Image (cartoon, one colour):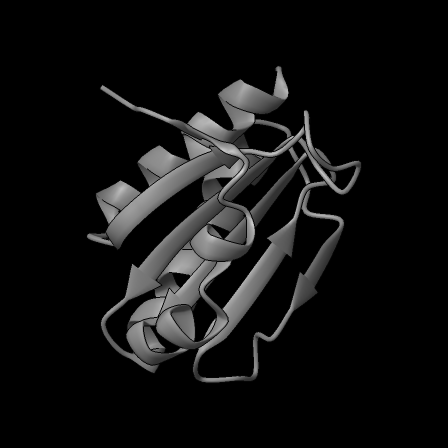
Length: 113
């Protein structure tokens, strides 16, 4: 599976659990960190955790294992690192505070239809 396909699968998992404002940003041309960031917002700390769980479950079913999870005990930002794809699930307040879209504005947003 390509990194874009992985990002799209994460997008679909987030969408299935009603994540808000889901974006895929292609950063591979501007950074060596990863190929794509997937960014989404949950409506509560419980929702943020359930979104992260859903991404991990769906990607695991596809044979893609998470290499690192950060922030699971926090109430505001969970990061799932799949090496070529990094999934960020935020509370609304944390997303506004960290503003990854602004930091990575040179990246190309991928439109999912």
